[in-house]
Image (cartoon, rainbow, N blue to C red; front, side):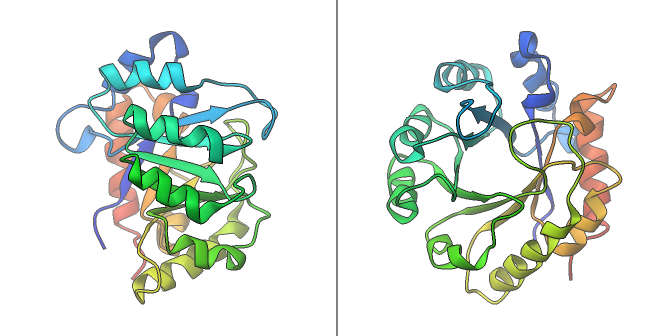
Amino acid sequence: MAEPLIAPSILSADFARLGAEIAAVAQAGTARADWVHVDVMDAHFVPNLTLGLPVVQSLLKVADIPLDCHLMIEDPDRWAIGYAEAGAYNVTVHAEAAKDPVKLAKDLRAAGAKAGLSIKPGTPLEPWLDALKHYDTLLVMSVEPGFGGQSFIADVLEKVRTARRLVDTGQLKLVVEIDGGINADTIEQAAEAGVDCFVAGSAVYGADDPGQAVAALRAQAARHRAG
């Protein structure tokens, strides 16, 4: 397995300084994040409202790091392609919202992005295994989507373990990502379960030095990788 990926979530960053906040985790060396996680919420699929495509387009002009756009929105079949066309590295949609997830994955890839599928804590993995054959990323939510700062739900790690086995045996070819409550207290159990990419919000942007927080989380995860 490759080195753990760390994707700081700008949901916990200072929205008045998003360009600078991204730059803070785009330093050289171990302090450089792998992706920057961008939570798009529409106040319909989830109760919160954050940002949308115009803000992502602006961030893409200044971000020297791949953007991992997590769309917590209704009707992603209609809206997700715009994020891929804008230049997002990875565009993740929710299984619970997608009308035709297989077609959507193909369309996202055709538009130039990696395709990600996310499932809520209460959503089982098994019904989506065939669709996941068309995706590049599985995002397992370890909190209910919609707000930052929630407590980690450890029960979702069984889904991570299942996905890890399927990837390791070649039945799926994707990055296993986790989002919600990831910090120094929870990253080890997530790593042991088989996570590849760790989304961290307040654990990074609540630190005095976000870049050093990225480096510390990556090193901690690497010591506890599955297998």
